[in-house]
Length: 232
Length: 374
Image (cartoon, chains in turn red, yellow):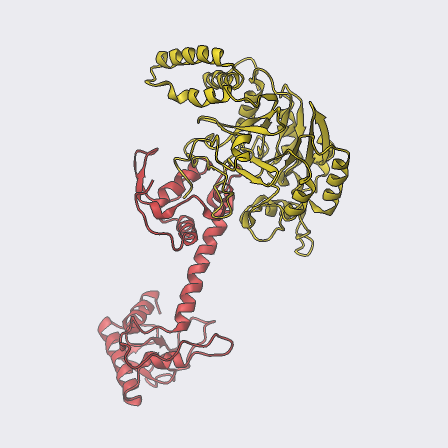
């Protein structure tokens, strides 16, 4: 199966409820076992681990057309709805998460809270994951900020030597007219300026993960400060 | 360093510094003469007003009744890496040496305020020693944590002698206290000496302990001061401020209160400290505190805990290596207290007077801040 197939199959059902491919060659990830098709057709399985559907005429290793894939996922969801009348797939997915050791989940949503929206269907656990991911990003920024070698400084000078806890970096004041540059600068322009000058490194590309992480760290240190773009 | 050739910039600053150094000692009559001269200079350079020379403020100084009995200069916090790695800090240290060597009259001595090296390596301390050898006046050394925590002071002591010592000079008792000891945080973590040094070298980590003079250091200080009359002016050198400013950055001495108690019986006490790389002023009862500038980089003011008597220096221009850095001088007054000059490079110098501190900030306030920290 080509990666392209995987993408097609993975993207289409996302909004419907998350479908996993049966008999994938990928190993190391827990998977639901789906019964093989007697005719040798490709079998796809829903994330409930029970519902499966065949894609007629498409053999294992072949690429279904988008129309075939859509028909397959529609069939899966229809089957799931038939078996679970009135149920919401996202509530079910949350209920399926192990509770052991984790902090108690938030109180069940009050009856008058809007629901039924995929975007709004996240749990306290989701928020913890997002928080942890964001903190990881910030921690990486902190590491780079404190390590001259990590961002390519050549004279042993790291950012924290002048900016402990990212003090005096005032990200809330950017963009602003940087008088010394004679133009409007963003925070990342100043990070790169510092990399080039006091630390004598090479500027990082705007999409360099180290630059992004440092921006994240600097901004995280100023949580709560009022945005005052343009302030001198 | 080729002492024969000086850049235009160096000569310009020598002239400028000589002007200011001279102004601090002039009588009213010669002040008027100098004022005319510098106004002429300003005109010749095409400057519209002579205000850049700060003559008005210095005129006040000339009329002060509490005259300096002598002056010492300081250089502090050079944070030298090996010259092959980082010439930036070397240039700054040399600039400071040029500054103090250009003072006329020469200071009675030069205090080095600690953190000669960045990571305490022999190569760095040797380089620092070599640079300080070119200082014309006698040099008194103080140790900083960056000099100490690689080998716990072994090589620094070999080069410069004991870290705590005292001496008398023109009726003033000077005592240097080693205030940057730390409780053992490294053994339990299995750190190598280099890791220990690197940890202490950073301000914003919670791993290291807080600075302290420690029990042995305090006992030594007590013994040293036993023989000193309480009327004798006392000047204490310490690397960290001997008070509690901001704990997370170790702008802090854990046993500050105990040390202050030892200094309490003396009528005139001044503490001159390094480490904080900023214009920093405090008074606690009878003790006046002054920070020293670094030659290497300025620290931002901490988010809290700043002593109320401190008038912040303008925040530094990152585009100018020397802005917010500098060196300075201390005029020891006949009264036994001191006026502290911050010779901020590329800016007007700022003097914090004993009378400002003695009056609790009512008189002789230094020029106020235009660009405070964010």
